[in-house]
Amino acid sequence: MKIAVLVKQVIGSESALKISSDQKWIEEANATFVMNSADNYAIEEAMQIKEKLGDGEVVIVSMGPQRVQKVIREGLSKGADRGIHIETPNFKNIDPLKVAKNISDALDQESFDLILSGLQSDDVGMGQTGILVGELLNMSTATLAIETDIDQEKIKVKRELESGWFQWVTLDAPASVSIQSGINQPRYPSLKGIMGAKKKEIKVISASIGDSKQSLDKIYIPQKSKETEVINTDVDSSVDRIFEILRSEIKVF
Image (tube, rainbow, N blue to C red):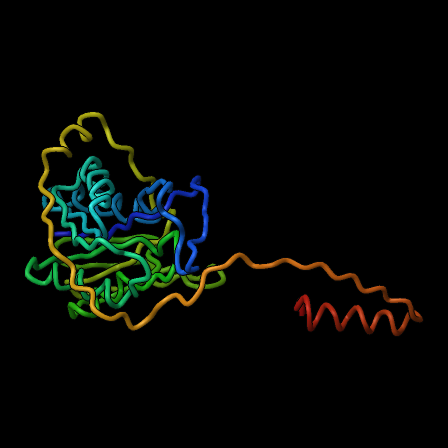
C-alpha cells in the first residue's frame, strides 16, 4: 500500500510569540520551528499500517520554505521511505484550499492508496487540508479517526463523534483520512533512523500560490477587563439578578 502523510512545520510552543508590526502573523526571526504535534500520530499510523501489511511505501509530504525539510527528515528518521517538499518562500496566511490544491497537484501522478493527516495544526487549527486534498483527488474521506483496520481489500475507520459516541465506516480506496491525536504512541527516531534519513530522497516541487480565497485580517492579544457588580437588593431580586447573570452573561444554562 502506498501511503502519503501530510505534515506541517509550526512555531514551537516554547518560542516567544511576538505579533508582527502589520498584525498579520507572528515574528519568525527568533522562533523555533517544530513538527506539528498532531502529525506525529499520522506518521505512526502510516508506519503501523505498512508494518502490518508487510510491504508498501510511506511518503512524507510538506509545504513551505526550505526549513520544512527538517520535519520531512524527522518523518524519514521514523521509517518513512522518501519525502516530497512543495517549496514556497512565503507560507504565511495561505488558505487551506490553496495549500490543498498544491498538495493534490503534487500527488496526482503518484497514485496513492491512502493519505493520512493530523487532525489540525497547532498554529491556525483549521483542520481542513487533508480532507480538501482527498476531495480534489476524488478520494473517499473520513475525519477524526481513532482506530483503523486496513488491509489490501478494505479501509475501515473508527470515527470519534460527540458525547462518547463513535462510528465505523468502510471506505473505498483510495482514501484520505485525518487522524485523531492519541490514536497511538508515536515512536522516537533511532540513531540508525536519523543517520539513514540523511540519505533518503526528498523531491522538491515549486508551489503555485496565486490569490488566496481566505486570509487573516488581524492577529491581536485579547484585552482582559474586570468589572464588579454589587447586588444590594432584597433576597428575591438578588436571586433573580444572579440567575440572569448566569444565564445571559456566563451562559451556564
